[in-house]
Amino acid sequence: MIRLLALRELRSLFAMPSTWLVLAVLQFIFAWFFLARLEAFLAIQPQLAQLANPPGVTMTVAAPLFNTVALLLMMLVPMFTMRLIAEERRNHTLALLLSAPLSGSQIVLGKFFGLMIFLAVLISGVPLMLYTLTLGTELDHGLLLSNLLGLLLLTASYVAVGLYISALTTQPVIAAIGALAVLVGLWLADLGATAEGSPWHFVSPLSHFQNFNIGLLDSGDAAFFVLFSVFFLLLAMRRIHNNRIYW
Image (cartoon, rainbow, N blue to C red; front, side):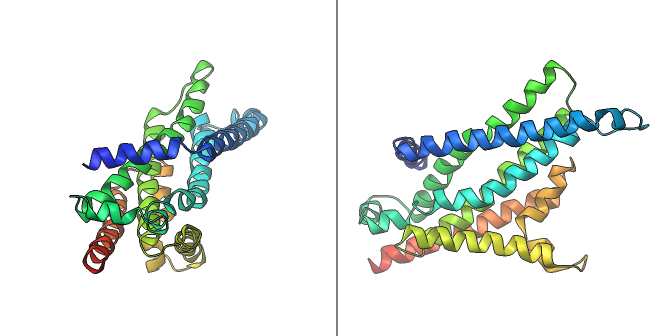
């Protein structure tokens, strides 16, 4: 049933013309940042050639590009998660899901995986652009895979937060603003925390992405993303369960 709900979510996403517009615009933005970073790398290449151990094109172009995409997704994901449950409730179609032989966990996970598959397709354009560089140079495949894994885990945490906020309201716009406020708030709190051991560094998803961004695969960061996502998914499941009881 989770697979069927995920496919239903994918079909509804691709059936909307606005989805294709967003895909086109984002690929253009990704390409623009990619070409800008590449141009900057080519401009400083003569200076880098004089260094004993110069950073490669992967560290100079790919890592900053993935960092930029992570910030863009923080702004973008709430636009997609806002309609997951809030729109169902506003359109009175949530009652159909709740009356179906589906558990709250199946509803939440179906919508979660459906959107994650869509976002994975969206993100796939980034490594495809970067691998065009193999025509003229060598890439650090380990660093690329580390960034891609970190970006997918980061996206999952964004989707989990947005899904829970969407389960709290009947207005998609309020759900989008709420999810964006939580994500941006955690990011700004992390930036504003000056102490090295500040708890804000620990609870900010973007802070944990930075290790992936430099090629450091830390099991603690991976565990944080998993636990962070599971926590908000469980909250969303609890909310759906309460809706079924009081419907």
